[in-house]
Length: 193
Image (cartoon, rainbow, N blue to C red; front, side, top):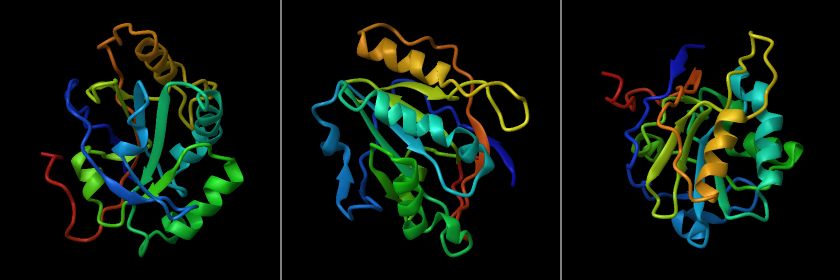
């Protein structure tokens, strides 16, 4: 496990398009699925990472709490499933079902979507406004597996509430941290400097 922080993609960046299979239904998911939503949360997660395991119940809660709201949510896993079988689509399907996710969980086999979003770690969060411009990228909250702080989702929820209320999201944003995305050999992105 390599502790990795978000790349902090510049605010205002347009949401990159994607077309990915959802692991439970097999349905193809894209930005168009959320066209009627005022905001869109794109989360890069996986099954095996201790940082994701630490917050997975809060991720499920987000899906339930915003189910009938103007927020669209999609989770994406881009890890190399050959070397990390817990992050393969069938395992992700079990995760989604066990946790009762109320949002699609997609698998990015080519890792091109993760690269387009400059995703670096699991979890990594990207919140877009109605024009699909990035307004928040950062941590869920300040809880970590080792610091005994409660998982509240406070930072991300504050950003979501601001967007839904047509208010500005604070530009003081703390990077998310977690396990690095497990890139396929030779497929590592060049945005790590």
